[in-house]
Image 1 (cartoon, one colour):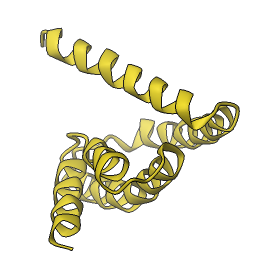
Image 2: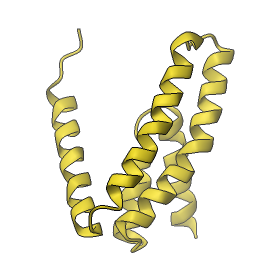
Image 3: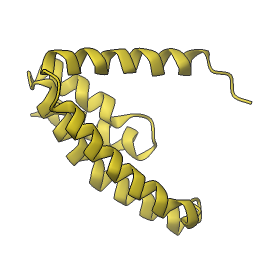
Length: 117
């Protein structure tokens, strides 16, 4: 129970700061809790939605978000979710987990070697 609380707290904090709380949650769910990839991704999305809403509200309140591109970003984000769900149902869980690992490797490598301008 304490591990679950710690993972939830760490995921919430890192997600609110934009540091990848979903990554923490996905690793926990798939490796420690034994949840399969598809279910873990669904839980991750459900976890992300309230955190994202709270973060957006806080950033708007602090005038850190330009509202103009926000609507189009949200619309295309929702469209992307449905496209992703459709694509996910085309593949077996085995291949989805491999694709997820590949994406993490690509983006992690990019971040590791990316120089800020």
